[in-house]
Image 1 (cartoon, chains in turn cyan, red):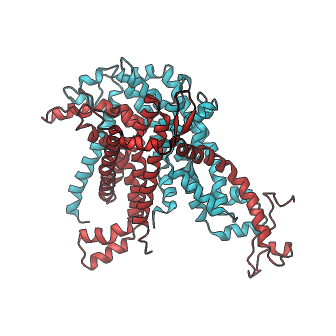
Image 2: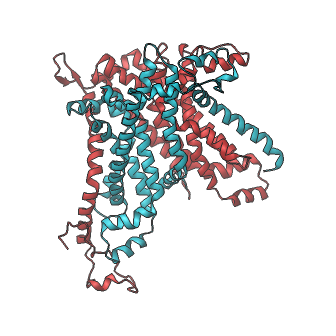
Length: 276
Length: 326
């Protein structure tokens, strides 16, 4: 690229970045404006809308006083349990589908692929009726269970396992290692990116969950954070300050995780064969 | 060691018949004899069953069975007494005769025909721009990616405030000397307003995948093309695009699947309005099941949605995946 092209392209990059950032920046800035005072600066628009001089953290202290705090705790708990159990479940299944040789393997793999082609949100409605019959509507179990059946996590891990040279497996077998130890001692250490990627996927699926908890989590004790935020928005007298602050909190958690693990995430998805 | 079911049974390593013995210690431990693939297979089958069963149970009970039950229920109707009877194709016939549902189909298809190509084109354009060696390139990439961290429901909440009459959008418009807009309260502006919400989250996310794909293209290809006198457009058309086909196909398919299922932004921003202009199918299904209370009609819609998605995914994989030469 010649030097003359750098300046206009950098300008374009800056412009695009600013466009993407502005709504988020405004939300962060407004989260420091108590109650509904933020709108005083957007109508008419003033620079104070983006720089919260004279603001305070009262929205955050109001927010972390009960209902919303509990909902964030619920979300963290549900997501953490889903990551641990979901990873365990997916790792074993992926190992069986990539390393073990048995009759019917292709069929089982086909079922796994089919399962993530069936959109969960679409079957959530028939399933929520089923969960209510089972008495799971107001329970953490009811919130966690559907997140565990993540065919895509199995798929990603399987693709990664397939990329590990079979010579390693054969050597381990000859050394007398059982399947369980081969999985834990040979495969897992080589699959850190895929594990992080799949774990992140499981976490985000629950942190973002909206349709399912809306359908089954009916009492406020078990509300997840996105539901709690949407409920704040729906109140008769909306406290926009709290909505801004809540949006920041809900974005910060996955934002930090993605920032820390972004490379692992794309690496693991790259292994699924989206790249040549 | 225990019986054939033991998952830690280690001795039956699958040594191919003609391996050079060399340093393979295990071979001497057990008189290798003629290989017994059948036995080995059945042992692996037992281990496989053990390893697969938790995931399979979850997948069958939490994905496949509900899908099947949706199909069955879509052919039934519920009587006033709560029992259900066979209805054949009645639910489907009713849906296609219902102007409300026809509107939902039209709105959903149009929305996807615009938003999916737009996502791919924008994320590709940004990937091309931000994968270049610009000053602070990593920063611009991070800023464009930032909205991808926003959970979908939260993006709905954020834009509902941005679009408020006294919100950020109108504030910026007036600052630029432009007239204020109704956004979500106008049937004409509501669909594009929702699209902006969806694009805001999606574009940076998919851009990251495309940048990863771009970085995998060997630089020597570009150098060779340049020596052959290829223009920038030709280098894009004959080097970048073909080598980026798989990431592009992935982005298009995954994004389309996601966008057929949009629910939270609709429920938070527009409730399907004004005048059904944003009544996308997932929202209509939800309304059908919970507001109107006709679960069987909702199931029929679920089945139609699943069919469309399977067709979309199948067609896109064929179109973009089968022309594989390398």
